[in-house]
Image 1 (tube, rainbow, N blue to C red):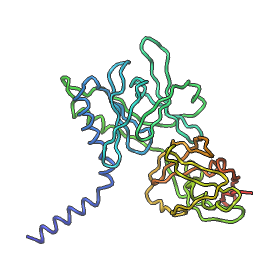
Image 2 (image 1 turned 135 degrees about the horizontal axis):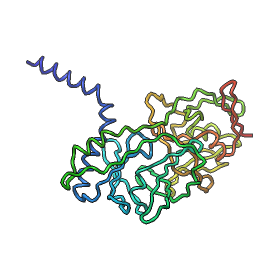
Image 3 (image 1 turned 90 degrees about the horizontal axis):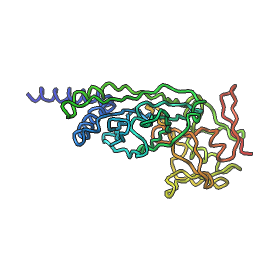
Image 4 (image 1 turned 180 degrees about the vertical axis):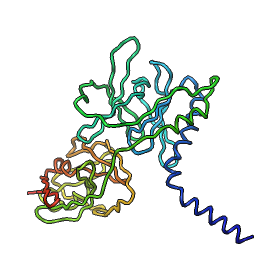
Length: 321
């Protein structure tokens, strides 16, 4: 009998070992159904749902809205790890702004734009949508702001048929959530290019994203700390942002130039600002496996060194003199 129980326990453990990744990847669906049921039960007039992935991390965000053109956004939430987290939502747009999102590609940076038609007018309002992981903010823009840029494929879903006799129907909500098949077109591969500083090759791990080379800014500061283009990198608690000071020798904190095996990549576009000598800038960057990577040319622009590309030898050439 003990042998049978032992065999059963072993089989169960093996099954659990085989499925954790797929389970974790889909665990948000059941959690979303439960949260939507709870929100609609407390106020059935908020009976519209938008599922979208504004940060393109593979786990969507959900927004609950009131029916009608004057309906606001009641609540927003997403999932971080195994926990549902609330999203702070704006009060200066109607919920329909999230129903039809278009994504534009501005030199590798994605711009999310929603549109709405206010009541009693045919004028279309356009809003730039920005989500930082905790708060959704919007900025009124003209269509000309993005009309010159190409659009990219993007998935979002809207639905409003979730009530039966005035109460939320779990089966309908689940069918809606299960129908979402989001996608994340962000991909990164280990960069195989060489990096040369003033004629000397240095070992720095990086990634290639959309045919450009990205590196940790602290790694680049480390290899340039004794050159004419030295700069320091700090986290500014007051600004809640990365701060770069040019002309200042980099202060080593540990962990610089460590390698990431890249066996499992989690890639997200980062929209956080960076301050260079006290001035705010916005550079395209990516969070890859928990670290922020900047385009090498952008680092050169902010720190004041030159960057060239030698296609014959697949080499990034940095000039600090």
